[in-house]
Length: 336
Image 1 (cartoon, helix red, strand yellow):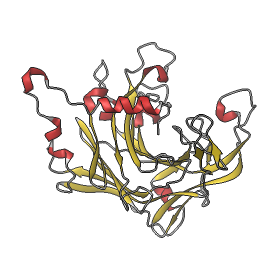
Image 2 (tube, rainbow, N blue to C red):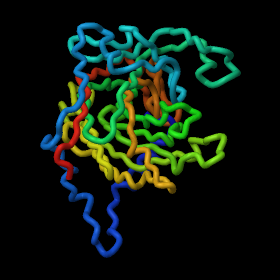
Image 3 (tube, one colour):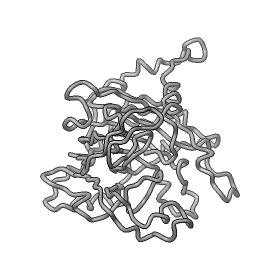
Image 4 (cartoon, rainbow, N blue to C red):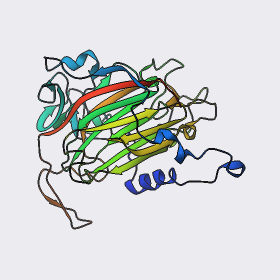
C-alpha cells in the first residue's frame, strides 16, 4: 500500500529491472539466484509459531491480536476507516470480513477546507472501510495469509508490512519515518485490473543524517524489488474463492508466492544503506486494509466515459468485501 503514488508505467519498468539477469562479477563465480531452491514453494522444514484463525465467537474477537487505524490515512484516499463497527469489519463463521461501504460519515478532524492537511479539509467522507494493524511484529520466516479479494472497479485491497521503527518514540534513535522504516507489499490488487497480483518493496536511499531536522521521505523514496502474477485462469482469480499469499523472508532474500507460484524474488542487499543498515533485516508489523481508488483505478458512482481514452469506467459496486480466513507465521527449522 504505497504511500507515494508512482506512475504505473514507471513502477512496472522499475520492477522489471530487478528480474533482468546479469553475469556475476568474477567470471561467474557467484551462485545463480535463479537456481536457488528457495524459489520453489515447499512446506518442508517450516514450523508454525503463531496464527490467527479468526475463530472467535464474537465479531470483534480480532482485537486480541490487532488494532484499528482510524480516519483518512494515506494517499488522499476517499474512504474513512472506522473502528469497532460490524458494518466495516467483523468475524463471522471463522472469517474476518472487511467491508467498504458508500455512506456519508463525519470527519472529527475536520478544520477548514483550505487549511491544514488534506485529511482535515474533508468535513465528511463518502465511503467507509476498515484497516487493521497487527500488535505483534514479524522478523524473518514465512508469513501466509489465506484471503478472498474483491474484484470490482475502485477496490484496492492490500496485505502489507511496515517497519516497527515507525512505532518507536519519535524523539528516539530507533524511530524512522516512512519510507526509511521499510515497506513490504505482500499483495496489492487494483479493481480495474483484478487478476494482477502485485508485490513491492519500498525504502529510502538512506536514513536521516545527524542533525537533519526535516526528513523528506518522497525525495529519498526507493523501490528495491517486487513482482507480479497474472492470475487470470478460471478459478485462479483473486476474487474467485480463497487463495494463499506467502512471503518467505530470509536475511538475504524475499520470495513471494500465490497459491505456491513464485511471483517475486528480491535481493535484500539492494536495500542496504551507506551506513550498513537495512530496514528489511528488522522487525515489521502487518497491515490489512480495504482501500479505494489508486493507480488509475478510478472510483465513480455511475458509469463514466474517460475523456482521455473514450472508454467507459464502470460504476463501483458496494458493499465490497475482503475476506481473510487466517494469518500464519512459520519459522524455518532447516535453513538453506
